[in-house]
Length: 451
Image (cartoon, helix red, strand yellow):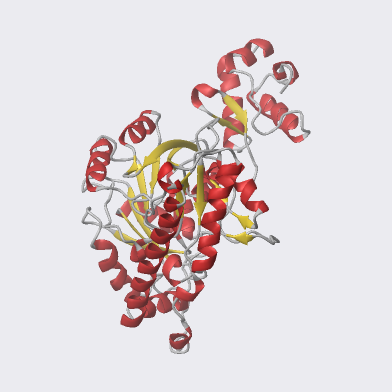
């Protein structure tokens, strides 16, 4: 905005002022990210009470037209698309940015499918298949501290998180998200019109000071990945989990959502932010990482009130997840051969990521594999510069900038790579090309790698 937009906003009532701002946005006089006048300035210019200007901005916030950034002021909402996981469309480059599991390691469901469709399911039947409910009760109950838990089945983890936030928040409510953050969480919060408050992540998970600061800013929900955090691969240590539970003890009604997306594949133990006395909580586990992304099913364990509200969020649309899908999930996760196959897949991802990290380290780009499908690689130069160099060498990678939440962040010096499905020859070539790209971008390799 290159001039005083206060002079173009008109109106005497809150509704008229809001309509004026909306018109400026719709005709392109105001663009995504543009700041709006401070409330006091706007009220003085229009000759109205300050509360009238506040009410106008609240109407615009509720409509998703503008967002507030605390002391950063009120801005036109950014409706730009968020980067998504998956293969890049129409790319001739070798894509190592997908975040996908290896299709060869996804169990084949065809053997049991024919046995599952014998009985149709009609309206009015239980929304959770009884067999799946018994299995999920044991699966979730083993790791959740509060004794009174309820189960809900949704169409995947993203569906669960979106509905959990929607049943607890209104537009412009603040949500604590990990920074760097899972792309789907960024998208969910942005589309919902919530205000993301970044909480830094280190090797032990969410930082204590970061969570404390977010709570001081009035967040009403916290979304956390307890292990295999995407993109960093970090997992909560026992010490960090205990410290975070201590911080949350004074905020028992803040909704804590744990997205344990890597569950059965993880090589890290499960450690929770949710203490035994926390009142609003949900643990979400999907099956997509080990049974395949097309198996759109997630189990949510939560406190009874949250479960009731989540069920209400399901009723306007799809009241239940297909019982055929529920039965298929149960048949697979209770099959000893499939369970063994899942364990082998988890070991494969860990071994391939460890091996690639060793390749990079030997070439002068120190790297260490965390948990999960991907590698989070530190660089001595901006990641976008390395990414451009790698494109010239035939590789498509993700720069860490796409995962960052902080306002006006410095250029990221991280790459997120999905390398577990590369052959040894391709892995050697990619590692060498990354080292060459770092040099071409003006970076220096470590002396150990140059010996």
